[in-house]
Structure formats: C-alpha cells, structure tokens
Length: 321
Image (spheres, rainbow, N blue to C red):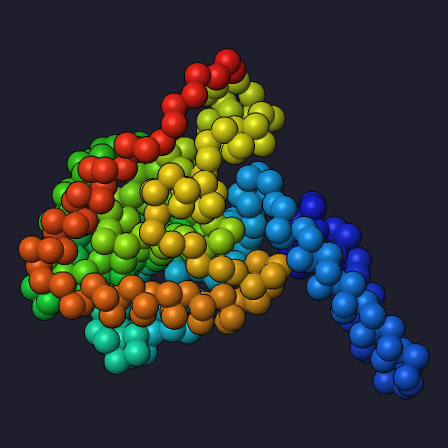
C-alpha cells in the first residue's frame, strides 16, 4: 500500500479498523468501536482534503493507485476498439487510442497511460509519449474528423518523453502539429486532466472546446521539481514552486484556464476509484450533449477564441525570488 506522508495518521486508523473487522467473535463492543473509528476516519479525511496544500495536491495527483487512462476506458466506455501505430514508425504504449461509446455516443478516445506497477510502467514509459505516440494521436484525431465523431482526451502525463531519441524524431514538431489539428477540428473535443497535466505533452492534446480537471489533479508548464531546479537551483524548493505555479484545479478555474472542476470523493480518487470515474463520466456527458448541437464553424470559432482570450484577466504580480 502506498501511503502519502501527510496521510500516515489516516493509515493507522484504517489499519486498526481492518484488524477489528478481522475479529470474528468481537461482539457488540468491537462493532461499536469500528463504527466510531470509521466516523473518526471520515471526519479526518474531510478536514485534510479540504485544506490540501498545492504540493500535497501534486502528491495526490501522482498517487500510483489513482485511476489512469486504461482504467477509465475499461470503466466508462463500451465497445472500445484500440487503434495502434502511427503508420510511420511504431506503436507507443504511453498513449492509448481507439473508438468507443459513452452512453451510446461514439467517440474517439485518446488517453495517456502511466501503468500501476514496475512492469506496466516500463511498458507504458510512465505515460511519457514518444513522437510516434503523438503521431498516432494526430492520426486518430484526423480519423475522428472524417467520421464526424467527438474527440475525448484523458490527460495524465508529466510531459512528453524528453530523451535524445525524441529530439531526433522531431518531438517538438509533432506536438505543434497536434496543437494545430486540435484547434481546427470540426467536431467537439473535450479534455479531462485526470492526474498530471505536464507541459507540451499535455497541452498538445488539450486544446479543446471544454477542458475539465479532477479536483486534485494538476496542470502546469513544468513540474514543481523542475521549476525549483531552475529558479532556486535546488529541488528542495519544490513545495514553494508548487505554491507559486498556481497549478491546482482551483487556481486554474479561477483564472479561466479550465471550464469546470470535477469533484472527487472525500479522500481522493485513489481511495474511491469507481466513484471518481463514474462522476467524471457524468461531467463529460453534460458537456458533450451541449457540444454535439453546435456546427463545425461554431466549434472552431469558440474553441479558438477561448484560448486567445486566456490571460486577459490574470493579475500580474512582481515577486522577488
């Protein structure tokens, strides 16, 4: 079990509850003690998760038990058929894509996948897409445009893979092409930041009519560790960097960078996975039903104008570092 450092007190209560429940002949006293501990746990969860710091939200967004792209595909989509390869070089397992249905509405789903254990993380390269992954995403968005079906992207990446091989294969160019295509799609596109939204690897698939964020997800141009290393030459300033970056869903919604925040269960999506994914489905459908009523001209116009208007109302503060 992966326990976040600020959740250690909660883990002790959960451990005690589990031990008491394993006692088969505890009687009424044990039952009442379990009830009291569960009430205590819920109260502590509510207090803790209502007051998470930005750095704590970063930790929650990266929790290994948090639902990833394939979890969402398996849970909220029907008849999903994966489409592989970029028709040029190879298939990238960091980005999964294909056609599926959500409440009988056909959609093109494109999702980052990080993996949950050592083997799956290695297979999916920790959700960091290579150029062939973004070429695949580009191809699938073109197919969706031809078939006149909406595009739905599930974002969960620390960023596109930054290695030498990516530079050799034109990572920057491919990301720019994805941005260009996202902006000109003639079908609705919705993006959901389900965990991390990092740098060009995220925004290249999230230039959408509607951008949603889960309550404890994050979205930024660089990781707090990377920001701290640049500004203070020391990654130990990562908590200060997270605070300065305004990378939480609440900050981004206030600044008009995203459309809506999807509430998570008390305790986070990593504790109540199915509930979180089903809530996400409801929010997707709410916006999708509105978007499919718009014609291609309006979809492109409102999408582009939305991003052109970003930043107009953000106050600028000079700060000494």
